[in-house]
Image (cartoon, rainbow, N blue to C red; front, side, top):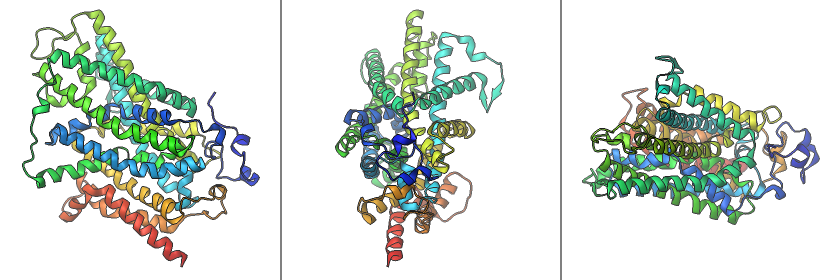
Amino acid sequence: MHGSPTLDEALEGLPADLRHSPLFSADLAPVPQKRRNWTTYNFAALWISMAHCIPTYMLAGGLISRGMNWWQALLTIGLGNVIVLLPILANAHPGTKYGIPFPVLARASFGTSGANVPAVLRAIVACGWFGIQTFIGGEAVKTFLEAVWPAYAHLGGGAALLGLSLPSALTFLAFWGLNIYIIYRGMNAVRVFENWAAPIVLVFAGALLCWVVSRAGGVGPMLTQPSNFTTLGAFWTVFVPSLTGMIGFWATLSLNIPDFTRYGRGQREQMLGQTLGLPTTMIAFSAMGVVITSASQAILKGVDLSKLWDPVFLLSQLTSGIAPEGLTAPLIESAGVRTLVALVALFGVGVATVSVNIAANVVSPANDFANLAPRRISFQTGGLITGILGILMMPWKLLASADAYIFNWLIGYSALLGPIAGIMIADYLVLRGRKLDVADLYRPNGRYAGTNPVALIALGAGILPNLPGFLSSAKLVTGLPACFDTIYPYAWFTGFAIAASVYLVGMRGRAT
């Protein structure tokens, strides 16, 4: 059972004329009160399972590689997540109050037709993230397969598919299929999966932490490593874009969080659960990554530090049966124990990656694509579209380097999503005072009908100042004035503030 409501169930308590509206479907309808069963634990578990992923584990490593020491990196991660929690909670409120998903909420500010613009922009970003997480999960599967079946690494000889070796392509597609299968089971399956995924991933990460610290005889050298910055100015030039990148990490969820909070029992449950789940988990899991990598540095002295930030690489060293560089024996000498560790590690990494991928990168675009044609595209079909686009975006290229990942990907899409968040929050909290006509959100001739030109102008105004900086950072253009490079690291902040201000001024001017 998918757990999706029937059309009759979705129409419960709503005007009968919505049955024939092209903007209404069971997947996008307000969630009836009796189906709102997410508790504080469900929301906390959602964030814990999403934050316990390999990109989170590696965040501090990217900041330390740019010159920060361990506490500066964790401070940047923590501050970024506290900041992004504010728009998350603001956009979460209408989801719980009215039971509506993100693309329907966007109709209030952008119009019933104009809402497709922010929905598609959010969906495209999600497709990229879906591809990134699927690639990471597929590479983990390949790594552990090679540990127990070394011949797999040479499967197909030099054959390639989509720019990947055949072993990588096969595990990528297998992991892709697992994600699509879960989303086809519906939102209740997502809730159940997130509930048990959260504690399992934490236990596995804790076990790895205990083992590596015990083997190293301590936490390693990284916690005493000084910062490379000797002045505040030098630190600031790295801190600001890094902070924007940390906000960008969850800027996606700051828009589509109503896709989840629409199932919440009440505002207290969703606010408390998210506050407990997001900042604390991001800091704690990033800190675990720092300690594990530091202790690993003490054990694997001959290995490039950048490789040690990848937990899949570290686990492959445990399960390979080959003595790492600088050591005379494998880290685990028993073949049976190595096989067991490989299987357990594969399960842990798989659960961590699937849990964040489903919740963060499939639920929203599935709804967003469904919003394009509610009567033709179901939630499941939208999820399939997301998966296909995630392949076509070739995510392995987005992970080519820390600079490409943070400056071009995280900051780049935050320049798109910050303005959307600014417009939606200004509309709901300031302009409308948290009051919406839910039925009109689904009527093609209601008060939100068509496209709101003020919202599109505000969106363009928020994006435009950061566009030259992105083009320069991505090396698509050269010779632009230096002021654009100065503005770009603040992309989410400037986009949010400009778009919200232009929207409020424009809408109030329109009303007079």
